[in-house]
Length: 334
Length: 288
Image (cartoon, rainbow over all chains, first blue to last red; front, side):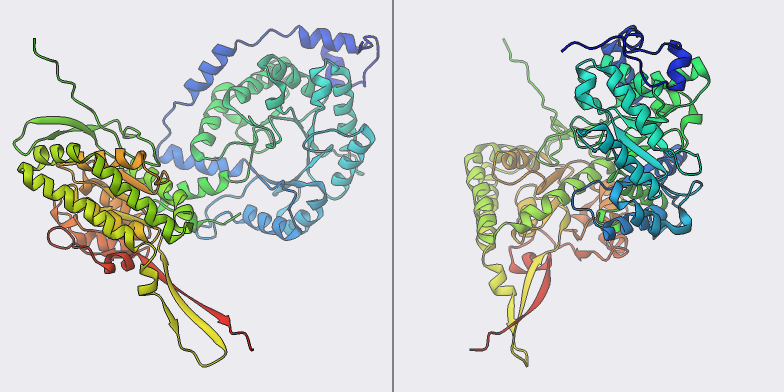
């Protein structure tokens, strides 16, 4: 299949600034394929060395609270019910009923049809300044649907009150080199995130790095998502193994850092899937602080997509406050 | 030409694997006469934590197995012990300073204890459970069930028979155990872990820590995910720590605490039922 090189792409603001006015499949391809290759050995060695930092006592207490503040508490199961979303929201608002000093999480992440229940359960605790509601959209997790369906899916979630939209890219198109198609879809979904009052729901673009196979592809996909207007780049859906890994997240943070140096604009990063222990999560915090700086450790710039991570963080927190080890009987069963 | 000796550095047994201590520490193990034998891992509180996590993870599978199945698995351990008899006799001779025949007797006794307890696995429920008379058209049945994770401080003097006499009864009803072996003579416990690793016992059902019981025991006693304590060897520890201190530490999370006995604990059904909880269910009687 040949790819039409001269087709004009949707005029996304960032891409026009960087690549120039005549935005075509060809100019986008030239830019993405002109990115320098990734030193895989160096990247993995760097990620491994960042994972060896020893974070103890007061630093650990700070890190644990910070991890909670950055969690997108997630339930993405076919068996989700309004009741399950309500208990998820209850947990998001008061993570540890035995210790009210535990901070709230950043957001709850649910399927689009569960958004109304999440918004209702959050009540006054929700909204722009409170706990956000994130909805996965665009035929999550595979992304195999036509563009009108993806747009309808997104609009539906936004009109139900979602503050954030987690979209998946079309990996099939990306891997077969049809960058323009992926680009146009992101631009279209971004436009579908527009609310009636003219503001936009935050758009997180899921790259599904487990399916992109190479670090070079991850770097290209990250650039593509940023150029098309993504507010966040997210590693994975959590439905494909491998999900988030430290080297991949480090690489995406490097792209975000490059973008910041180039334009002064801060893009968020969200590793999702496979981060289950506090120890892992703290490695990510170290990586963020060392790669893009500590100002990224805020809910609007860095998130953990996780469901079981919160319980482990709470157990560690209980250990720090009580002085003895806690157990799964002392946190919720999800 | 004399042969170069290969002194061994033993490891812990946690979750069916043989990890080094998280702390990286080892301590020398000597014979009863003070001659260096081997290095053993000196477990830290984090190893104890990992062991409890492994024991908890193994708990539902082991407690969910049928009593008959648990009995078979425990009996298989006795078979494997029998096959390693010479190694255990050797270790007991060296580390406890026993004569050949006394060491033989201890190994025999340890194997007998395994077999005795293995037999109880599908029988103790009949002894400890009951059908209760109630006024109404109901069956009312009480059965003992495993209490969960049992932390055990093994007897310090009798390193094989003492160890077997405390872990076997806890396993019978479906508990999983974290045992701190004799500090001075841990070799029998380590060899037993090697036996367990090649037996049918699922990983995590038995976790063996070596090192200072006085250091690890308070962490296990206060651990919120440990359901019961067997303090068999807790009064022979170095330092000022007594079993009463550990009992007090365990009280906060309402643990069952089995106090020490003098000498090697004698086999008894009470040791099995001590680590169980009684569940009572009602069931309607059919009207015929």
